[in-house]
Image 1 (spheres, one colour):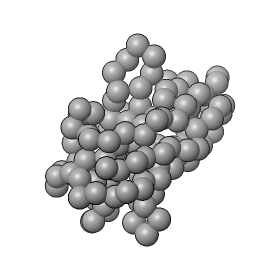
Image 2 (cartoon, rainbow, N blue to C red):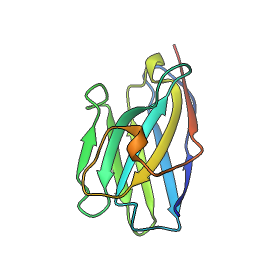
Image 3 (cartoon, helix red, strand yellow):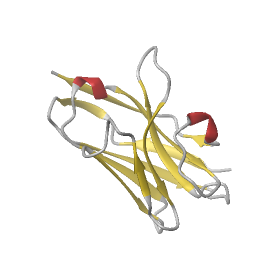
Image 4 (cartoon, rainbow, N blue to C red):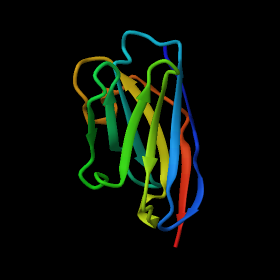
Length: 124
């Protein structure tokens, strides 16, 4: 079982940048893929970005590409999400999740373990 803890959330102004980090412990074989998702009140959990632990290959949601960068540090067992040019529409709870398999998928139900989430609030 993998335990995930997100950090780095907070209140920022539109146009600011924020870096989220996800620390994993108890790595299992079912954690080849890490993904960042976000969920705003009343909305489904949506894909933001994903990364493969081995190759470092990445995938981004079309709406986020160009503004976010996902990276991993296998030695530290962390996956970070750098977000730039934030706007009020980016306000949400951001979750990191992990799954086994070979491909980065965008459906939240495909991920096996989740952190508790980090609140990101962007003011205008």
